[in-house]
Image (cartoon, rainbow, N blue to C red; front, side, top):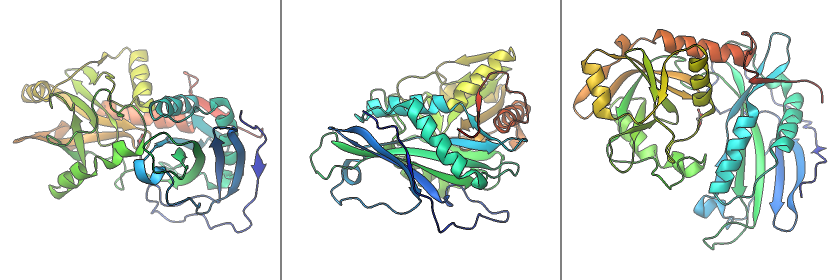
Length: 359
Ligand code: COI
């Protein structure tokens, strides 16, 4: 059973807030963090907000050895009234529990976590940037803490939420990037952990990312692990193509992450009566569309970058230049609409945002 009473220990030694134009993604953290423990006997207990500081773990803690962990990523914004806004937080917490289920981690009450998160945000409100393109990135995560080298689910866990004021995910902001299609390494396969937001899915991609960077590309595009034929994701994002007026995104197939931005884009396109379809799409089909002059736009979609246009795509010996390496109109419109709703500049007709006021 979760103990609902939240202890708050205020930080007496507050840090200066970041100043100036340079705010690299995920390198500055706020003054407080949320922590909660789990044991088999007690369930989730001891929810607390404490000063942000390093944590101590036994060197045999299972997270260090077999990587049993889950994380999430969402953002908080300040609207024009100066209130805190969250974007579809329940979607992230539902996904966190789906990831927990896949990684044999006990579920956490979504309702309680939203409540604790709101209290943390109210305490850290001054850290939420209100400059264009900036937000407060929220990173909830769970790690296995039992000191035991057995290859089995941990009997104890720690759940934490840390906060980081961020600018654009890519230092250049919304700007078309060059992508290399990865032919050797695989991000995920059906039945694996690709649909869970777990660390191994990300570090398993570093090798391909390094290879792409050596060839001057910003990111990789992932193909399915069995046939190396169908497109799955781009970097750590879902991917969309505009081909002859129709928007295509790979269908969820038990190896693709179910992105909240992906879901929101599909819902927006349907609402605008724009033809959008979730289906398998192969590299051959994409190249054919390009050669026929029908590949109009391509972009990645995720919480961190929101929407990230693809300007150039290299596959085998082919290089496709998409929309003259310019951000496409639909890509720009989606970016402006989603960030507009997130920051309260545009009306939230879908009821996606949640305003956080005093509890
Ligand atoms: C996202 O944009 O949704 C991500 O997961 C990126 C994050 C791993 C930094």
